[in-house]
Image (cartoon, rainbow, N blue to C red; front, side, top):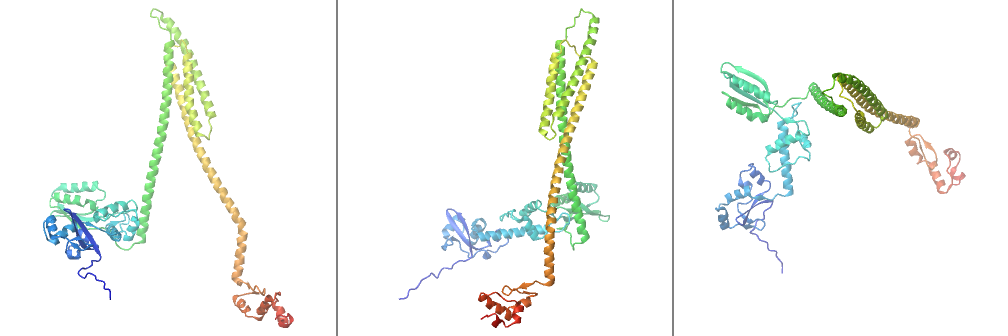
Length: 534
């Protein structure tokens, strides 16, 4: 009895299917579509449903082949027309996309974006377009393509991204703007617009007295097209024409033009480098000036505090004036006190100079930290000495004008000394930096000398090897036989030796455990009988 496998013959298996599914009203509806056609239909590239749908029927489950009920279609969609329902599912349904389809879609989108960039962008200096392969290489793997985003929006984002990688800009448009010459305000508006936008330039302007029209040819960035269109609508008899959508430099590359372009690039780079260096120098000068100014203000504040403390102590220790007393007594007291004050001021100045000399001698040239510490300690020591001297002054009246002049002169001298000290400190740092650079140069020079000495030692060996190689190249490589011990001038003689009787005889001797014979001994006598080789 034969066994027969029964298969259903009323079903047609669908292959290469892309299922678009939609859940609505608690029911699931599916349609069977061709792959890579659903996205074309949604983007408007395909309008014929017969090219998108594999069958016109609406399914409840495509994989099982279950059709949707007409009652469910009427209840959910309000109609039984399956074509309109299929259009609704195509536009609003969920599409299952495989990995290969998604990868192909991303590659297709990237190719379209690169084509747009290559056809609408140029190099800023040469004004020549990039190739598609150059654009793709510049994008690399860092730029992510969005398959559901419009191509034009992604193209603009791609140009912004490429500006960070390579020199690129959108190619300019050549436009013709016509307007009436009767209104001078139109010319003023156009000139103001050109002055406000660097990417807008006027290349040609002609006026026709017959029809009283002015025609201006402009090179504008594509982003300024709407602005110029609005201006043309406001001008009397205004009209905007597009002469060229993309302005690029055409023709073969000339050597002189290429050299000129490279020179321009070098000049631009040098200008940018000079501007950056100038900014750095200005910032460093401002920092040093600010540091010096803060130091001077701090010194002035400390000196002013010392003067205030000395004046307060003198006012406290000064005797009160009697109203009933004589004026002669007051006149006699002032000169004596002023002389004492001068002596004390001179002692203070000498003491300060000695302290400054001691602190400057104690500073170490190689440690900048100790220099800063000494600079901070020195003002504190002077302040303490000033306060001690002020407390020791008893019965001292306020100084007169001569005393004030002496104090101002002493303060000025102290400021000059501190300023010279600061300059000396800066010069020491510069000297230390120069010493370090000189040490590095000496170390490099010494290392180079050592390498040169090693080269000189190896030079005779290299020369000998070169001489041997040259001799072998001229005379030919000499080859010898391990069995017979003879040498041969060339490869032909070496190969012929292995076929000779001498070599075969020595092989027999070698197998018998006897030493080989030379070619001269072999030719002098009967080797077979004389040497007993068998």
